[in-house]
Image (spheres, rainbow, N blue to C red):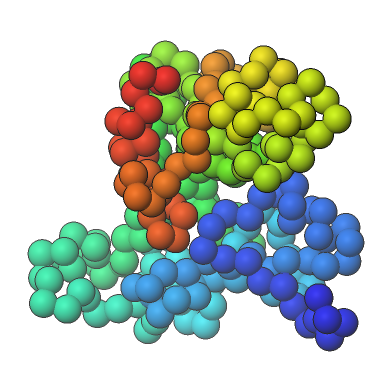
Amino acid sequence: LGGRLRVLVSGSAPLSRDIAEFFAAANLPIMEGYGMTETSAATAVNRMGKLKIGTVGQPLGDLECKIDSDGEVLLRGVPVMRGYHDMPEETAESFTEDGWFRTGDIGELDSDGYLTITDRKKDLVKTSGGKYIAPSAIEGQFKAVCPYTSQAVVVGQARNFVTMLISLDEDAIMAWTRGGPLDGKPYAEVVAAPETEQLIAAYVKELNDKLNRWETIKKFAILDRDLSIEAGEITPSMKIKRRSVETNFAEQI
């Protein structure tokens, strides 16, 4: 890191608690933050000496933050946009009647004013048993425990249990095969092998040990290819397009 490091900051996607704790233990604490284009970028961030791992810190400047009755994070203050240019209907939908901006994110505020983002409002899924699941939080935890993961997609909307689609990082999984029975086999054969399924199953069990009972992954499928921008499954900034993934891999689901 160059030897002149002053601060490490993480944003734009959830930082796994396991990763945050690892860096903090190495005396390299990461100041996780949160922001949106509509709020002039950064809205909250942890400060040096006041880090709360698992949160995105306290709001910056005079920005006000509160949680709506449905869990949505609401913001108000000078950094918040006046509206979308020439889009009055979209602008009206983005604000409450008393002027709070609807972020579309679900979160929590603790007694010290630290904000925790749990998921995107539109990404929350509700099982047939009526339980809400935050897919991206589970996916992030799985990526933290399984070093062979490229992408993970939790599936649970209107279903009676939660499943997960997993694509593997080709370089990592091929390195794992060296010296074993799958050494020299092509990638497609490796990801379909029972040995690989046993490997990933152990990481799924490790994940499940950290989850509530209704969130646990009951079944999973290893995909024979990675998700792609070309197939409409991820955005250029690597965000999962869930509807497209569920359509393209309906047979596996």
